[in-house]
Image (tube, rainbow over all chains, first blue to last red; front, side, top):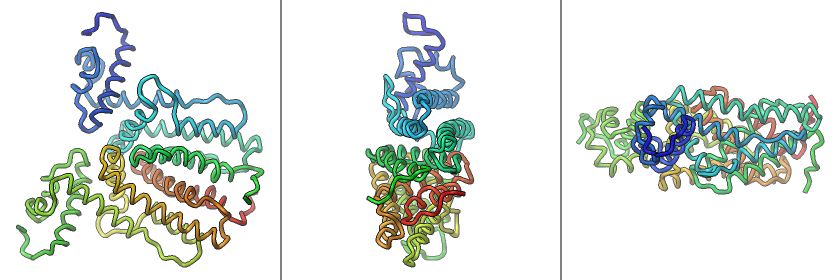
Length: 209
Length: 209
């Protein structure tokens, strides 16, 4: 069913379809997207899509999982035991994103935030986003808990702090995308640093300038 | 052109159309909305819409301004001179919203957040949201500046703090809507209180439990 002369494995084919979906979504947006738009973005015939996916909705749901997997794989950071440095690294990765070969972090985030807004009407997407949100928040909560254990941070509600920081990251990315505030991620990083992380420290820095 | 027996003023007519648009959007969503869906939600004939608005896009742009006006009118709070109480009141109003006769704060916010996600592709909507965002942030910045002047808060970057709090509010509302986290606004209020506002205080409370 492939128009290519090279044999492609099932895994490669799905990847080809996912990247074609990406290009099509970037051009046409979510609500106007047709299967044929995706077909036009790849060298394989459109029938390949129907072989792998049970219609447009199934394809887009798989695509959402694909984007989230890539994002989560890209924002993992090495633990070196210093909670402050690790928290900083995690916040930075979530805000500024990993580098990808094709499409930037922001190309990906545009699609991600558009699908997020739609999730209010879609149980399956909502569940995927909810689990993803839980994992990102969890990775922040974990490092805050480490900090409390190591007496770097005072006794704080790590769950609440993790949620707060995750919310700030999400809002700053959304603001850059929806309002074009190019400096939103940088502002968020400074604000998290100066007004949240500082307030967690067991030995706060002197606050007078 | 009205099917009603009562004469209605132009202002009333626009209001009727706006509320009909609200009902239609709540039922059909933004991307699937047709003019006839709006017509079906009101007692006036559909021609009235065409008399007042230059097509669907013009109507939806006016509708966005209408929703934002209502929201901003509803979140204004009286200044009584106490920056801490005022900051608290503003954050609460933005998170939990004013009461309206028809449709709850959350009905309105669902539409608001859906249009926000679309604004990335729409210069006019982006501008409306951007100015709105600026006013909400500005009202938070103002009260932080008052607090610094009155020595209730330490010397902080009021612009950055205002932006941070505005981002947290926006993200928590979005999380309630997109992910169904009913407790997101309440979490955000506690987090702003315990981890942001406390860190602004010129005389911080003792941090040991």
